[in-house]
Length: 180
DNA sequence: CGGCCGATCCACT
DNA sequence: GTGGATCGGCCGA
Picture 1 (cartoon, rainbow, N blue to C red):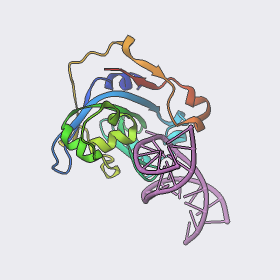
Picture 2 (picture 1 turned 180 degrees about the vertical axis):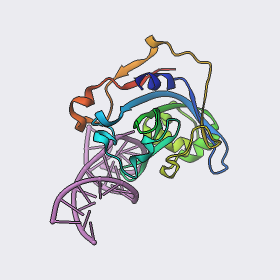
Picture 3 (picture 1 turned 90 degrees about the vertical axis):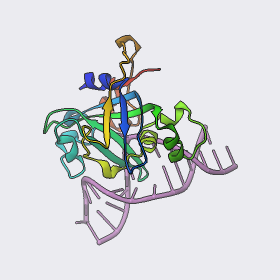
Picture 4 (picture 1 turned 135 degrees about the horizontal axis):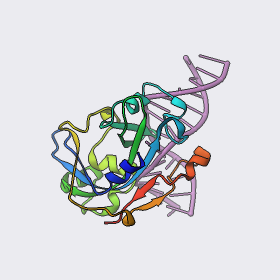
């Protein structure tokens, strides 16, 4: 699971939604959420609801959650059926469909910062929480390999963000990043 | 059925 | 640096 969070670094996430054309970027920061034993996860203590049900699906689907009523947070479900593990995409480096993405954020010139932050990632990619449960093997959202090799030494490991309420689990080194 | 809260971001001082 | 926005889901009554 932690391994998958690391493996996702350097991959490209592409979306092709609403007929606006392909948009995507290289994944540069992720966070792992380790299911029912992880207080920071929505599925902590086997909390199975309509919303979290997506995380219990077979890996390879998107789990998108609406946070603060405004922001869609994009996760990738990573494990077997009934094991609610997910990886939150925290940051991407925009590479595909720059003009479309600029339109989405109402900006003129692309800067890498626009892809930093989970809410921004969804905004750039045009992901809405209604896309929750969407397969990553279909023609709307998918992953591509870049051939980019991320060496273990290049991975920045740290504590997760915004989960102080999770107490001791907040300190787990489940946040991974690379600088490209 | 009502109220509170969250894996956050941005405009504004 | 910071306060406000904003809404679906969950819990308690």
